[in-house]
Image 1 (cartoon, rainbow, N blue to C red):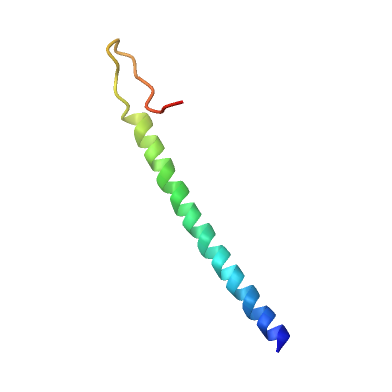
Image 2: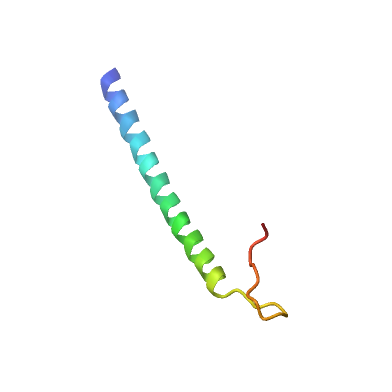
Length: 56
């Protein structure tokens, strides 16, 4: 009975980790797209130079 519970627990942990990693990949892709859009669509300041769109 204990080996069966361990196998089921391992399957549950691996399924949860796989889902979390897939979700993190999607979040990383969305952040990358937003960063690239911000880089391309940044506005020009009064001197005609492209300004920084980020805070740091």
